[in-house]
Amino acid sequence: MRWFRQEKSRRSALSAVSGAPAIDMRNVVYKRAGKVILDGLSLQLDERRVGIIGDNGSGKSTFARLLNGLLSPDSGTLKVFGIDATQHTASLPQFVGFLFQNPDHQILFPTVLEELAFGLTQLGLKQGDAERLAREYLRAQCRIEWADRPSQSLSEGEKQRLCLWSVLLMKPRLLVLDESFASLDLRSRYDFMAELNRQQQQLLMITHELDLLENFERIVWLHKGSVKADGDAKTVISAYKQYARNGL
Amino acid sequence: MISLYRPASSWLHNHRAGHKLLALCFVSIFIFPLTSLALLLSLLMLCASMYLSLGKDGLAEMRVVVPLWPWFLMMLAFHWYSGEPVAGLVAVVKMVLMILLANLLTLSTRQSDLLSALQQGLTPITWLGFSTRPLALSVSLMIRYIPVLVLLLGQHRQAWRARGGAERRKWLLVVPALIGALRLADHVGESLTARGGVSGFR
Amino acid sequence: MSNPSTERTIAQIALYAALIAALGLLPKFAIPIAGGIPITAQSLGVMLAGVMLGPVRGAIALLLFLLVVALGLPLLAGGRGGIGVFMGPSVGFLVGFPFAAFTCGLIMKLLKNSPVLPAAWFSAAVGGIAILYVFGIAGMAWKMDTTVMQAASVMVVFLPGDMLKVLLAGLIAQTVWRGMPQALISRA
Ligand SMILES: Nc1ncnc2c1ncn2[C@@H]1O[C@H](COP(=O)(O)OP(=O)(O)OP(=O)(O)O)[C@@H](O)[C@H]1O
Ligand SMILES: [Mg+2]
Image 1 (tube, rainbow over the protein chains, first blue to last red):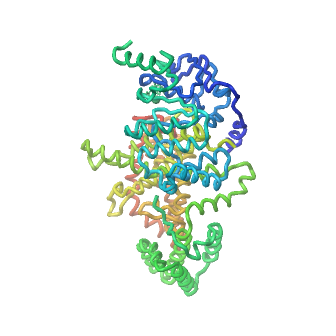
Image 2 (image 1 turned 90 degrees about the vertical axis):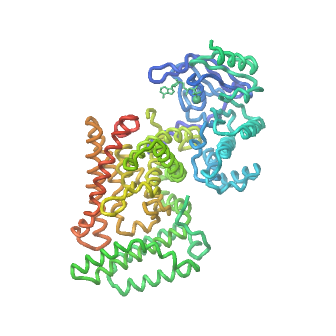
């Protein structure tokens, strides 16, 4: 139980540095099992919507996990909203919300209401207040009838939506999506994308579905742990498509 | 998730979970040393009338002791054999009484209320700087993932049969479930961390 | 399973507790032998929790399982649950679950350098039979108001099934070890 006190002290309140870019990454190297997975990445990202594309195993998920402290770089500096990510890994999730690929890995509570309320209690709200706010949120989404449903009884698309809402309720400044669409049908994908576009959060989205990135402000193409191309959607996507068809 | 709680509005449902829990403790301590069959039987009648007072299906809730009949038979037989049949009867009635009383608590108390009562009971440890949050969180996580693991076990069974796996060696199916549970734990742990971890941001 | 964090540990414990429950909920996993007495996979889960997770996590997983049973979920094999199960004749076994898992894990850890199969067999036998029976028999003698010998005689019918479970626990641990060694946390 000693860890609990340690955790508390590690999570001393932090506030984002105003005006700092969302992501400021310099020469970041990440190794795992003797293999270099991210090879000296340097990126400053502050556009509202950023897409990350690249082959399987190119390091996209690793990159995303650095942003909210699930992983720490081996060398280089990484600042998220001006906060040193290597020092304050435990505080990062306050600013960076994460949506995983599989909702079954993300939903932690037996009922919808508990799942939504959890994030709010994480921010310091009392259980009762959190549940009341969560109920209001559900009502605003016209889904109040979900409140007491077992989370396991939702369909895949509904589950993914629940995941999104429980992250959004915590009001992160940046939302990271790591192939969060894999289990959705085409229509749900477009619905979901529209919902994301209505939010004011900054968005960093990893996907193999290039269509969804069409009107993003910036696309980064990762290849074998480094940046292969970086720029506006049209240029980078067509370069990537060209590569996918013909090789380098 | 199915629960043994029976939603209803009886006088017993309206009592606070912590009080019911304490009452059960005291009653158990009181009943434990009793050896008078007459007294135990009258307590059993009293207990039955409590079931009756719960509503029209109240008495039927007493069926929880029925599956234990082989045990009761065995107890009677053992005591008969040692030449004290009354002691056997006392032991059986006492056990039935205790189970029925405990069951009253279970069927009239929501599990979340019981858990918060427990957390309240643990308040002294929070003065020492410990938290009861990991406890409540683990309970939620466990309940949440039971259906997921049932599904996981089922899926592997199907894959096993589809590939012509022998029924005789179906215990091997536990292997992917064990590994799957740990893989899942990695993801769940990550997901928990990504939302502020066990202690949150307070 | 490198990078151990509190969150991951809690998840491992909760998921193993859930797995023990899931094994008890699946009626088809009952192995119907040993003189007609159905043997459920649940107590196999007790042995495996210790053998796989190690002493501390294994024992906590069983404590969590018992807590949720006490809270009123019918998770014991046969659909039993609630505080009433702690008033019945098998209370000794329930109380013994965490100790059994702890023993399995401890022996597994002490035998770190011997081959998995015999180590798992030995620890499952000591934890899942010897220790569990001590608790179970004491509980029966107390609750049924019989002598220890009388209570112990009841266990004769369960022994063959439990020995089979020890056998399976060893084989399962061995198979996991070959397929994914890091899943055997008691050895990490
Ligand atoms: N724990 C680990 N141990 C060893 N190698 C790892 C580990 N985690 C990731 N890797 C390796 O790092 C590389 C990048 O992995 P990552 O998951 O970041 O790829 P990705 O771009 O997300 O791929 P995908 O499109 O398939 O999701 C892969 O080659 C992978 O095998
Ligand atoms: Mg990935």
